[in-house]
Amino acid sequence: MKTKSKQPEEKGFFEKVKETISELWEGTAEKAEDLKEAASDKIDDLKEAAGDKIDDLKDKVTAKKAPAAKKASTTKTRVSAKAGQVAAKAKTKVAETKAKADKAVSKAKTEGAKAVSKAKSEGARAVSKVKAEAGGAKKAVAAKADKAAGAVKRKTTAARKSA
Image (cartoon, rainbow, N blue to C red; front, side, top):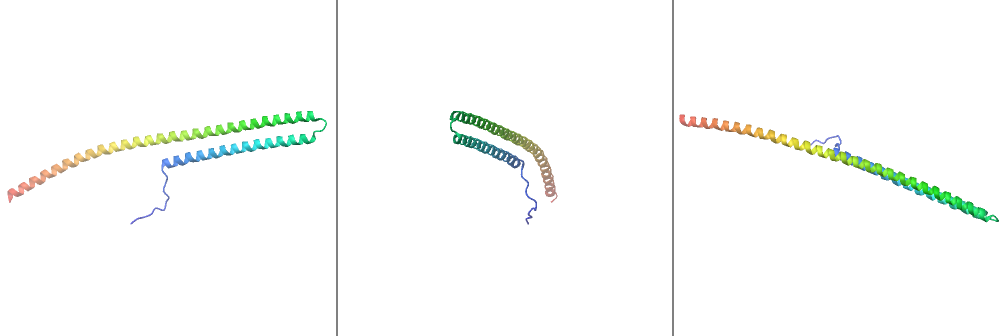
């Protein structure tokens, strides 16, 4: 008769480690993608703002064309510099996040390897202990069997003599 357990099966150590690693990796990958998208959006916004400013300045150009052009190029230079700074910051953040993810993954792998090593050594110790105990039990059973066989032989011999 089979009885089904009402409780869910518990996951093993390695499944838990595997899930933790995958959760960490997914979280950091998503965060890196978000940072990359935010940086590209910011760069696009800055470029667009710079383009709008340049267009506004071109519309206002009249007799003082040279000062306006100078102002526009200065603004464009500033915006380009700012865009470069934002891009550099985004790259730095992405690199830091990736480094943290790599560190977490390597730590989890190391812990998993240690656990596997420990489990193997404990298993080997248990096997050798069981073998030693089984060897002793075999010898004891063999001695008892020999003793019992000798007693049976003596009884049969005595029964034959008396018969």
